[in-house]
Every structure is written in structure tokens, then in C-alpha cells.
Image 1 (cartoon, one colour):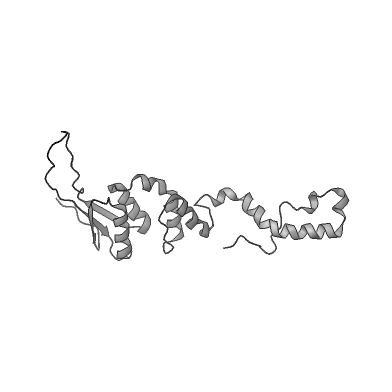
Image 2 (image 1 turned 60 degrees about the vertical axis):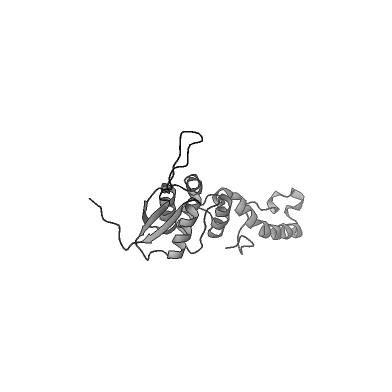
Length: 184
């Protein structure tokens, strides 16, 4: 999409009509300002609609990638446009939840429309006593179970999980054909 010269786009603010009365009937002045109107009409149209350019729900498709870069949203041109727009809208929320269970679930749902289950906590431990011995090594692996398998490219899902998991936690991704059954 281009916001350059648009053939036949009328100017909402023609310059010729704003000239002093002396030039109102001057053919050269009117033709000259008409040429300027043709060049400036896209600029005025863009400025008149500027708020829409900064709203990811309304912005032209090529602006969505630009807006995503502003807010640090993951923009994948292979995803449907509506999901890309939603990623920009929810970028702040996802940044706030990054590294959390809820943040990872939201990111998977938003990026690929996948349901997931997370097992394990990454072995987060602490002590209230200063100078105490380190706690025993815990289980520091988190299992992310994603379903339905085949709905999204596995390498891209793994890359997203790697990005959203805390750096000290090993995340293992499992692809399931259907949701896991309730265990009694």
C-alpha cells in the first residue's frame, strides 16, 4: 500500500480557493495550485486520518508491522492480519506477564490460537534466613503441553516458548493431538 500520489484523489483543502481575489480568475495560478493540490491531497488525507494510523485495529496493514516494532510485539507476517493486530493491542499486557505461566498461555493463544497446559514451576525456591545454606536442587524443568498438534509449525511454537520462558528454566514442549483427559 502506498500513500504517495493517488490518481484522482480530490484535495479537501484546495489551495486555489484560498488565494486572494486577485488570483481567483487567473488561469495560470489556478492550474499551478491545482498541481500542488494533486501532490498534497495524499498528505492531507493522511493527516486527516492520523489517529487511525496509530490504532492497530484500524491502521493499514503495512503500518501494523511498524506499530509492532514500536511496542516490541512479535510480528510474524505469516500470521493472519487480525492476530497481528491483536498482538500489537495486547503487547503491554504480554510484556507485563512475560516469564509467567499466564503470559506463556496468552502468547500461545494469541500467536497460534493454541490451547496449552503447563506443568512444573521451574523449581523456584528461597529462604527467609540470611546466609542459610542453599536449598536442595529441585526439578527445574517446565513441561508445556500444546494441542492440537499440527495446527502451528512446531519450530515456531518452540521458539515462542523459548522466548517467553524465564532464562533459568528449561522448558520442554510436547505436542498433543487432543486435550489431556482429566486425571482422577
